[in-house]
Image (cartoon, rainbow, N blue to C red; front, side, top):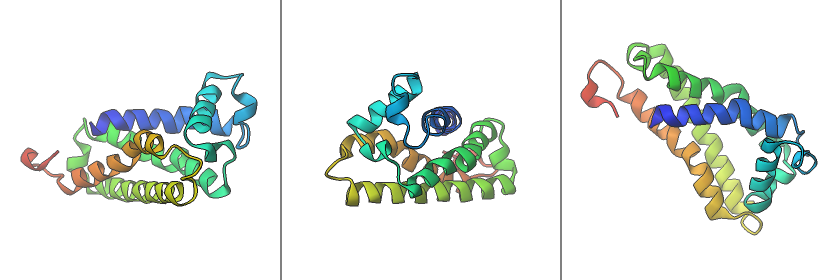
Length: 157
């Protein structure tokens, strides 16, 4: 399951977010919702569930950029490193993945806290949770897998 979600998250970070948020412009979801499928899908999510994305504050722009610039490497490292056995043989890779997973988990906690504390009256919190919860659970799985890494397959997830 870690590899499957890593591939999905890498696609979102490297294709979906850049096309929807970066190429449309930070305030451009309204303008590009009719000109691209990705813009339409981002606008649909924002207008129905999470209106903060209709006018992104700077801190959330930074967090979304981190997903593309930083976390995409973590997703790709899990997608490639787990099937190839590199997580079990490379302490350096485990250290990188642990740091990246910890940072991703932290950013999810910040995002969810903001949604609950500031957006509860506007956002559809159950929908936001269902859609975004995999990004919070996956790094926990990565941290557990890194902690159990090694030559003994009985210790692994």
